[in-house]
Amino acid sequence: MAKRLLRIFGPLILAAILVFAVLAMPVKLGLSKVSANRERQAAVSLSPNVMKGKYIKEAALKGKYVPFFGSSEWSRFDPLHPSVLAQKYNRSYRPFLLGARGSQSLTQYFVMQNIQGELRNKKAVFVISPQWFVKDGTRKDAFGFYYSQLQTTEWLTHFRHDAIDQYAAKRLLQMPVANSDHFIYQALQRVAAGKSLTKYQRFYLETRKNMLTHEDQFFSGIDLPSQNLNRVNKQAEKLPTHYSYSALDELGGRIGKAETGNNPFRISDKFYNHGLKQELKKGKLKDFQKNLSYTESPEFADFQLCLDQFARLNTNVMFIIPPINAKWQKYTGLSASMLKQFDQKIHYQLQSQGFNNIVDLSDKGNVPYFMTDTIHLGWRGWLAVDKRVNPFLTEQQQQPTYSISDKFYSTKWQNLAPSQLKQYENDTK
Image (cartoon, rainbow, N blue to C red; front, side, top):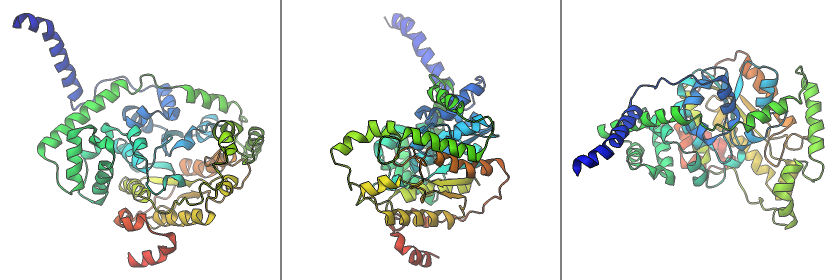
């Protein structure tokens, strides 16, 4: 009976062992090179699998692609979107869009973990959304949606015993998804406590990382969505043959005017009809943001993780601070003074550490056709971004000197009122 069972199940067991052995091998598999078309698709796909993975991102970023970190603004494809302009005018770079709805600083920090080689001594673009900086910070379900064990094991196999890693481990332990692997969870507990990993934990993490890396090589390009690339191609057809800022600005105004005709906020009719119209009729949105604040949030410390990582890798980053639609801001009661205070606080965190490439558009909320909806750039807004981003990426830039401070991980900083900035600066010198 035993021999009969062995004959039946033996081949299956052997096959499983062989598959495990292949996946656990510490060497890269000899897979075919990522094609140029697959890179183009991945760069604008906004796919969670691409964000979580490594193989395609790593291949693309070794070439002309530049990481554009952010969130839901990247999905607003119009003729003046960064990906469309770079393609139409055959720029020396192409944006690789990293971010979608719900992705914030903590997600972006872990996204960086398996592309460190492609960030080192390179350039990047990072959009800072004020909406991230709410009282509770990143939503746990949103973080879980983009969570990657591959990125986590990459990080755990080269972590350092310092404030950045302890804070990152503690934040990850606050997320339910951190418990999806018992052994990774235990390793995170040791890092959060400032302890070294055991020999077994290192062995497990290295083996798990190899398996996940090979799985990513096999499966990351399967069913890669192409609809966004089709949108980019279609939008590029609407642009003039030769780049002209004035012509593009006129085009942005013309398109914006045509697409915002039926609502009082001067935003996309499509967005208004599907997202706001019915809610406005119910009268629930008037002054509903009057008590909202973006000045006290754990997001400030999560954001510091990204700054710390950029500094370690000597990455030259251009930060973009988008505005909020002024008509929407007034209608919902969102405090203008609070937004100015947020701007002051984020500027201090950036500039005091040497991050001075900042495109601050926070005062452009009243500019016609600058935004496609209540909080996202569009049309003329994208063109304003391009005016700064294009020379930053195509011309030689002076390498910044960073001076990173662990004080930005403190609870005191997270909850600091901007009015206390000067006193805080004096106290922490």
